[in-house]
Length: 328
Image (cartoon, rainbow, N blue to C red; front, side):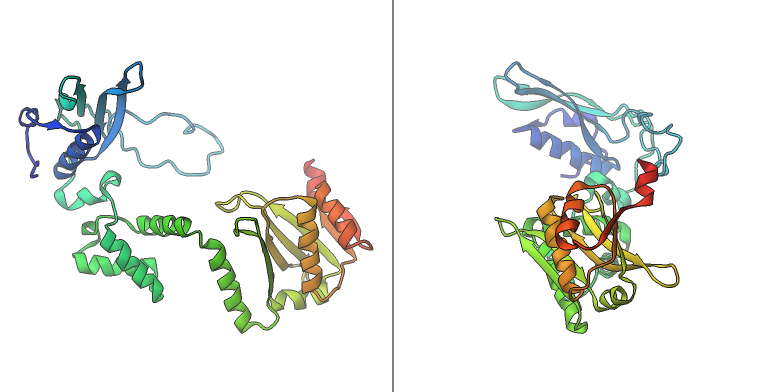
């Protein structure tokens, strides 16, 4: 429907079979007139059924001051988009006909509306079509990355503003498909297998849980093994938390070379920090390093780590990290 320039008076003749249909109508009206829509207040019955729903302009209201005045704030504030726009679309259900009718339709905006060529850049109107997703997957299979794919679409469409979505939406779609396929673990193992084809000393081991999902993953390359053979008398390792979307601890084995520079001996992603997990990790480390045990091991005060070190490295001196001692 061509709703550009349609007056609120003309739209009052419309009725909708569902609340979702009413939202789609106002969302399409907003797209054709240069603004976006978001859902606002609703009124429900005692049984929890929605009786009234208000949709507003995306620039309605004002930004909350929460978190903006923190002195040690690291991120810059995003540009202000809300300006107290009063435009709204209010619908209610007719109990007799069970259809949704327009109660209030205010189309007075206190800001400039976007030109037609920029409508698709608003967050509410950005969407990848099925054809775009299929084309993206085909290009990814042959090694064409998201940036090249996005540039190709811009050439086909006649400009970035005519694509209908941003480059960030491509990365979000790739992430959604990975979650649906649950192939992150498989891709990680394939990547390490590819490294092993070029590095004869590449070492990696993994375990899976009862549902076949990747649980623990250990890896180290040939350079790390050679570094450990020379500088492995003192071994330090610690778990870093929350550095990935699965919130799995990342354990990094490191040391110091003759130039007083850090060197990495191995890396591990684990599902938990139980004692048996660390025993498995240290056993894989010992196997990768041809059975060479360190003279001294430096960690934090984690009890599971301490017990695992006693079992796998019984002759090693276990010392606490100075940074943790000072901090605690």
